[in-house]
Length: 239
Length: 291
Ligand SMILES: [Zn+2]
Image 1 (cartoon, chains in turn yellow, blue):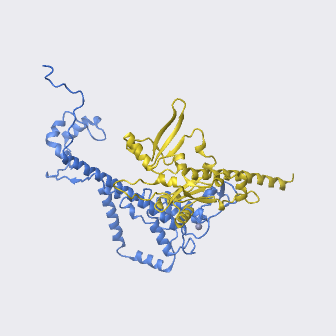
Image 2 (cartoon, chains in turn yellow, brown):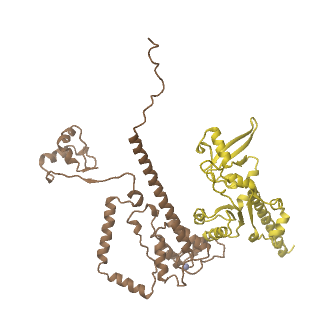
Image 3 (cartoon, helix red, strand yellow):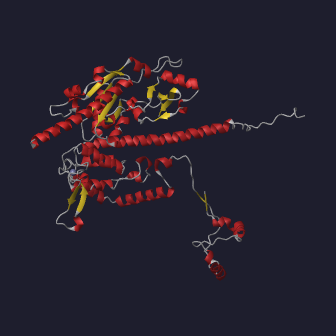
């Protein structure tokens, strides 16, 4: 085998590894968006590696992230979950704080203020309610400060490719988390005569909370399987 | 007989709630505390946003193509103004952000930062092997700037920034004035600088400034947080009516001092039996201050 050919093979192998990596992240982000309640076609979520390569890889096996972006709209079910039930005092509650989502993979060795600002401007300009930016490197601390600064226009979440290689919620030790709607939350609190602050908590930075895109004040039902007690549910307040 | 007596409760006696007036006072105090902390948070948030926006502005600096050793007057002035609330860590973040945009870390330099293609982690700097100007430097450190001159210019600013966050700074500190290593060398500026030097009142102004700083220090002026603090501390000068008297050093007292000098702690002799004696006639004289 000539040195030239050797190098070509190695390049191809590296390209294949990279393609497989990106495919896994691509799959996880789709599952995440679907699990949150946005509408996605099944063939988009369950894209095979071959299809992914055809779509996003160049001939030499290099993954082009420029096209790795997609949007989704919330399902009716999700809209219901985020809506505020009308009360006597407020018969016309505000519209559910949810809307179209935009996901984008960023190809950059360093992610700074400029990237985040551009992303935020894109989201606002296209009326995306939420945006997920997936990067291969850590974002600089000052760039992350953009997120709260634009919070009243659009909601930005960031993920590292590394964290999306496996879908953590599919791990057997991670119990099922289910988001409660506002109505369900108030019913729960009423039933147990609790204030929401009396519930156990889950951090907003918790990997599962990040996966679900939990917001402060939301309550999740966590369903564990117990050998002695069958299924066992607990509730946590996101803080 | 036993039945006629009320059974004694083993529960804690309910303490009557304080009168409405005092609970009103407590509510007021609670509200004040909440407002106070909310204000601190608000100031802090505003400052942080300010720093973020300034960082974004300074990312695209300079606005002209003037070289770093002779920046344009407007750019230099804006830079100085924008950097005021920065802490050194914010400044470092600015340098990182500029490097991401492939710009020299010094905000007034139009050149791109150096790129080391060798892939080495360390570099030697120095000429002719002389010990004093021979250094081993992180390549990453070198890649922040376009040249060593710019590194000096940038770090010259960094050391002038205040370590304390802008919302906690003292009144004096918030009047930070930042100088550049290479100030703009345009004609008007030079003339203006000369004029400033010529200014006859300048000395008086400086004196005034110093005086104000001293006063602030003496009063314990501590910027926003302490100025609007929860505890209202007033220090009052105590009026002493007695005629001042020079300390005497007559024989008897001196020998008395010698006899218990071994008891002295840093010049103070603790006394136990004589305490009462001092107590009734000398208490006032011992303390000429009062909170
Ligand atoms: Zn430079």
